Amino acid sequence: MIVQPLIGHFSDKTWTRFGRRKPYFLVGALLTAIALMVMPNASFLAYLMPPIIVGASMLMLTDASINVAMEPFRALVADKLPDSQSSLGFSIQTFLIGAGAILGSVMPFLLAEVFHVKSTAIPGEVPANVIFTFYIGAAVLVAAILWTIFTTREYSPEEARMYERENVKELDVVQEVIKSEGSIKTIIKDIRKMPQTMRQLGWVQFFSWFALFSMWVFTTPAIAEHIYHLPATDTASAAYAEAGNWVGVLFGVYNGVSAVYALLLPKIAINLGKKRTHALSLLVGGLSLVAILFIQDKYWLLLPMVGIGMAWGSILAMPYAILASSLPPRKMGVYMGIFNFFITIPQIVNGLLGGLILKYFYHSNAIYSLVMAGGFMILGAFAMMKVRVKEPVKPFTKM
Image 1 (cartoon, rainbow, N blue to C red):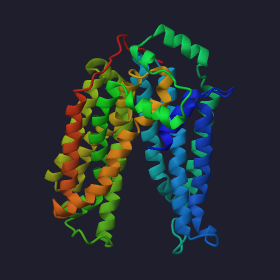
Image 2: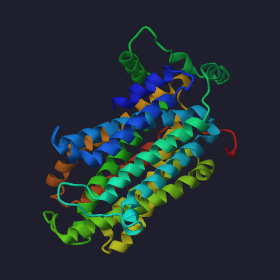
Image 3: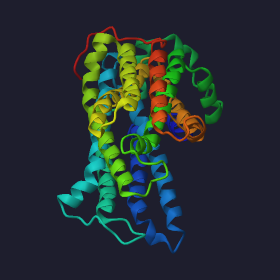
Image 4: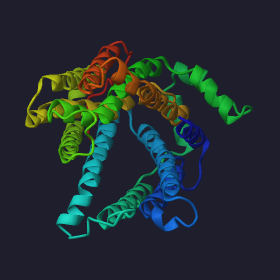
């Protein structure tokens, strides 16, 4: 909520010989890589401060740095692509996110089983396969960022102004850059003048991310109780660990489905439109979450993961493709950052209330938290149908 709007605001105003967005995600990637390398070695800094403080600090630095790196990436996609290709651009980005998530998830297993890297450690230390996974993640991140920097050309301010003159929007006239005010005041003004489409998408995002947070937090206890018939307090048994491992498999399936589905989204959006495509994806995801209540066999849980993967793939792509066409080019960065409010706020709300709802309304039956998540995702689908969307008039063309 804090980092992304500021980075977006400053990147909107930046132009160097290295580009507009690229300096920010290069610095963010380098800081993230440093944090990733330090985090699994927190115990070696114990003479300075408790390892948990080191680890938590590196986690905070990682999270903030990833935000510095990734926010300008979304703005860069929107900067570079016309409306007719925005769905394709953000869908490819979603595919790469899904592929990276799968690779990162299986890397410790591959290192241990294929390359025979040690997977155990004495208490207080991190296994070698996990440490090397962090190192590989840092190297891959920096390599990917450098690839983008060396192969992608950004439009100069002069080219951007020419584009704006050719595509004059009423919003561009209203959203003038106020140089006399500070960054915070300017961002607050930008929030007040938020485009209508962005406001409407905010509700869709709120319902979607409230549902996702519930799924991420409560799936393991829900599956342990509902499928493995374990009591809610039995979190240290081998059976509960088995349930958690199976949830890891299920999450890997929905990430894999989202990666594949992301490649299909542009074609679907051409036929149904962006609005209906995202609404349908959320509806399928919501019904899939509710369906878990009626499943008793763990293998049948693979089926709703397909629908959840469709929703996840669409959530990572379609809102940004819709948003990009409604924003003034000179404010693309800051509004992409402000849009992050609609991702973080529902998770904060759920973090504060989700546990209380589970305890006092569902009597600690976590499966009903998944049903609630499905209900919220279905609400997101209905809210999506209320959004005013500018659909591209040009036919779909390849990049």
